[in-house]
Image (cartoon, rainbow, N blue to C red; front, top):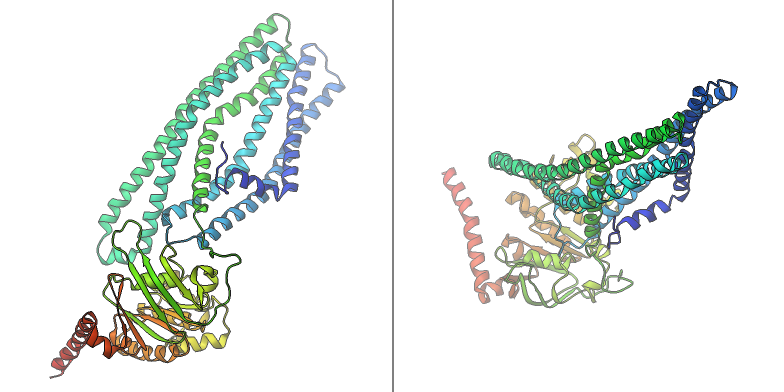
Length: 588
């Protein structure tokens, strides 16, 4: 098996095991001791049979019988000892692989990443397969291979002709295996990719199950699942078919080897060159040669599947991480607000820029609203400011330093963020709020600010109440309030809020917007919203359209100077007046 070019590969696995070199050394000693103990039984059997045939039964013969029985017990004890060592090494290797893949997932750049959720899930599943292969199949294969070599040596010791006959079969085995490797590799890779698609489809359906049921999409999703499973099973069948063909050839060679040993052995007995006991010993040890041959089909398939898994995980771990452009990275936020100078960005696979030559200066404190139609570049700008989108051209400065010079994770820890699509995590309310380890008073104040104080008091376990996966036990509005509390509890110098009141009713939205307006006076608060009544309260309003900055100023000025803003305001006021008119009609 070839080493992977990635930093993750067979060499990395070897270095990981070298960290537990003491346990590995004991495992190798146990394997070597097993070889020695494995010789006792066939040799003792040969001596006993030859003595019985010669009509000799004495005390030394009884001693050989006891020694043979003790060798069986010793082999069992060594196997148990090897098993315990393998379990300890398996836990160590699994922990290192899982931690490395998960840590990279948290650090990988997501702006240019081309991986899918199903692929990542499959990578984690393959960690178990790699671990089992490295710590179960490889040691067992080494034991079997070493046992076969020792058996070869013992056969040559007993009779040169039988040994040469066995050696003549080795090239046939090598040719059969080499012819199958490339085919199994291609099939194993196709199977791996099919499993990734299956896992992605499953994750997508589980996460979107409420939508599937609400839109009655069970039929289309079932048809999609059937097609995906058909692909997986087709690729699996191809792998298993190659294994079956190799297994049949290996079985034929194994049977031929057995017949060859019997034939040559009988010929040597007939010529007086081999005793019956020696022939019986050769038969016993030859099983240690044909046994690995029969199981080699499974091992070859698993080896190729694991080789594919290692290369695919290695490719994932080679994806670029989020890193500052300087070393050491900047971890100090200076004064000076935010400056954008000629910022442009075009997403891969699209012709139209998401942002075009955007230049502006935002103050260190104050409220700046960003408005525009859907697709105007508002969310893209927030992603750039968060350092999530780093392939832009131009320059972005925060606190007087280039955005790319900051440690990305450190900088985001100083920015309060509310996403349009609120994402919560399984765990308690406290765990969802306490990412930056705030004190209890800060958590309480943030919950009151977001209007969640009364809700927490009604929960059976208060802040320690479990939310469930994705916070599904909360309503959309409650999830959004919790997201706001999560941003406020950090007391950040910069806050980026993307439609923070989208899931709240008008009255609750107005109350929360008043709180946010007061809170934003002590920091730079950037508010992306379609709720122009909230934007009207901002110190400045930026108008984006097609990725370009069309206007920058206060509400009254923009109404006169920017036709797009005037049109947006007219549409907004009309939409707000219609519900009021319908309510008046209902009352009359």
